[in-house]
Image: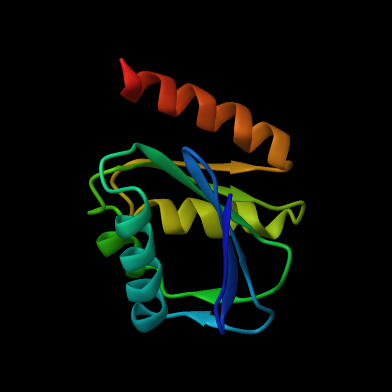
Length: 124
């Protein structure tokens, strides 16, 4: 596992998935997203992976960042993990900007099981 502590988030890279925890109060802007995309493309060059955002903190997302994120060739899915009901509404809206699988889960265990299914489809 490799960890990054950026000014706006923490990232944990595993074999086929990355877990991101954004800092309280930040905005995931195109500039922040460009950094995330660069790191992900470098780390998972030809390896299929899933991006899991663990929404522990309160922050905002510019939904247009998903258009660029979906262009990462090795990215096969995007998961949001949160226990807050309000996130379900956000995910429905954000999903419209992302052309790949995009799911909401209440627990990390659920997201990791889903990640296994997504990756299995792409390793055949």
